[in-house]
Length: 329
Ligand SMILES: [Fe+2]
Image 1 (spheres, helix red, strand yellow):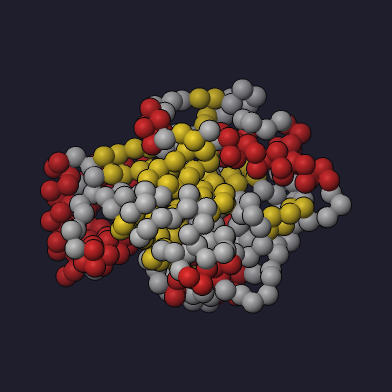
Image 2 (cartoon, rainbow, N blue to C red):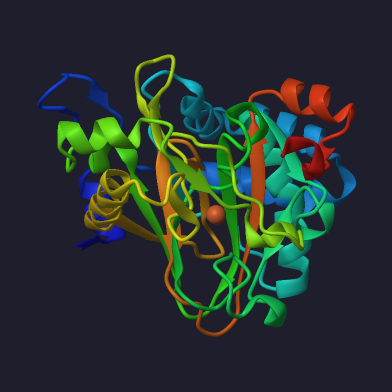
């Protein structure tokens, strides 16, 4: 059951409650279309961006487009939407120029929400990763393949304070209208029985290190749960569905629960298309994501964002924003 972008929009004001626990379910996708005044201001900022630092650009955005800024900052609140789709951003006609300006704007947008960071081993350790099909990754489950990319959250092998809180995607080109898929964990748990949910919340599973880190050895995690509750008592999720297994290979109950979970994720699918005018930000712990196959030329700019980088800086002994993942496993 694929729900289109229009259907997601129709879902915008829905406020629903779990049947069993009466916990508030966050909106899966908040939509914001940049209005004419905001676009005029943003166009000026885009044009000036070459001569400004990303922090200076962020200050300009806050000053001249306060509502746009508030829409992004809303992601920080309790009961924040799981994801935010902003459309109608300026699009530079020259593709090379667009790429460079959008890279700069990616960092500035990230600063409205938190701190951008990256792992040394990914995307050449650049803060803004260019995600586009790459021939060396054709047959992998990664953002660099062309094939359908299965459901996952990013870097769930790392502890929660070492993985990204938000994933920000800014469009550059999307010739084949590849869809980015989203499955909110609040929706998924409504599909699960109490018994299955209970098993998924136990330390009975292990996940594998993502291919994109390029480590030669296969690295599996210690036993962990795939779903848990955060300090606000909201459900959170961490799992690459193509790199997960019960920690005990004889644990048939865990395997059955895992298969029920995978079917429920599929049943709660939303879809958005990231065009050159689109900024999409989602909470890596509250939704699973994936995408349809890439046809033609597609590039998005991905930025990882955390509220703070304290734990990453402490464990790596590094005060910058690029961290060596070898310290994290
Ligand atoms: Fe991902």
